[in-house]
Image 1 (cartoon, rainbow, N blue to C red):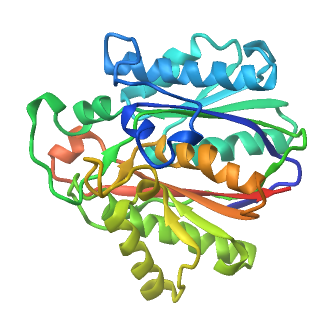
Image 2: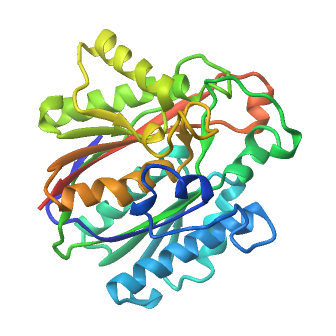
Length: 328
């Protein structure tokens, strides 16, 4: 399903990261980077929740607003019961919508928010997404203290939070349309190969978006997927060609862009819900505002797994949601 918007804009964004992102190639585009993974907190989970509050404060300071100016707060993360978002929501007087689409949460949030703005159900919507490397590892795989070896296809969960303010007030960046993806299952049960798990979901959503809008890949200056990593990125390109006869042009993956995969200990690149919006809100929107990019299709990808079902050796379903951004 694809939604078209006439009057939805991203008025401001803010990003907070951990030390790995702060030492990566896009570091200068982030608003704040912590030097360690605790963020002055006692636990990883508390640190993740704090990053949402920090990013929210930075955004509101940029735009000269307070939390009382926000109508709806939409947020999601990887923790059980999206607790990082919910605890951050205790500081928000706005109505709260907690969402979950794994690493596709950012574009799902933008879609929900855009629908509310377009239909005049809300005036100002704040969309937030977060993840934390150590928190995610403890929950989905093994605590990092175990020091377990991992294969090269492993992706490295990014740490931080990214927030965006949506309204009908005209700005430099417009949300032109959005496509909600369907759940796909590639019959893979390897939790260390998320790129292969999610690539078919990304392909399905890109094809749906192009079909629904009557466009070709040439319409976009850049097509971005979220956190497929260096191997999933290549799988997607091959899959698009074989399954749909589409050759991806002007394409990149935020999981590859966020880190220097050749120099940092991040295996196949970044993953996590915050991966795609960190790259997009920090770097891509800057390029759009400078006139270097006009149209960008952001396709965040998510593996819809749980630790319990992974331990039961079930296959891992995936989903991808796409948002079309245009520079005004």
